[in-house]
Length: 71
View 1: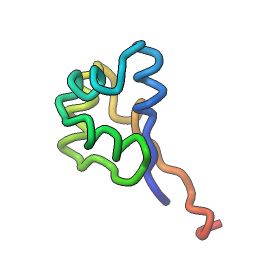
View 2: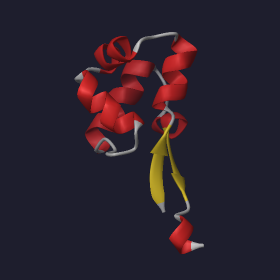
View 3: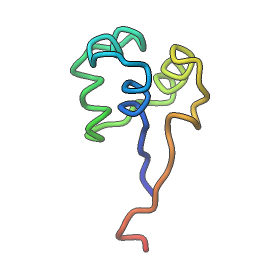
């Protein structure tokens, strides 16, 4: 299984630029870009920080999907 996130969907719902979203969650814009492109995923501490900053639960932002190779 691999982890995915809804950060871009949430950013659109909030009508924020990528820079504004990065500022809101407390990271650098280039780090945010890596997360939304699924190149990297935030660690557990960052997941909690992001959820707190967005006033959402971790589960509302991050979720697991089956890897195609596992099917």
